[in-house]
Image 1 (cartoon, rainbow, N blue to C red):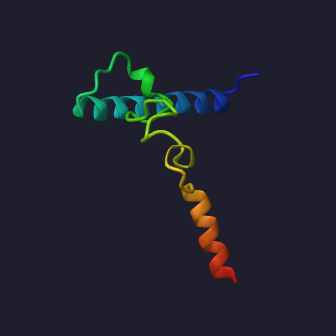
Image 2: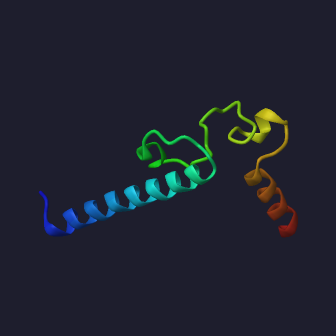
Length: 82
């Protein structure tokens, strides 16, 4: 069932998504990226191409053979706990 509280939450969630998409498209336009639809940026960053082979978007372990940020953080934490 829908009550007023759930309708309010739903409308706030949709507003938040719309606001995020507008901000990301504004930034993308400032950098010269062609924006066909602002909803393209609803759930992702404007500079994320989505290609896992891209050096900016891909996993550093896969591309350069180095450890990820999380792995480095865990190793550092393990060293300080000893």
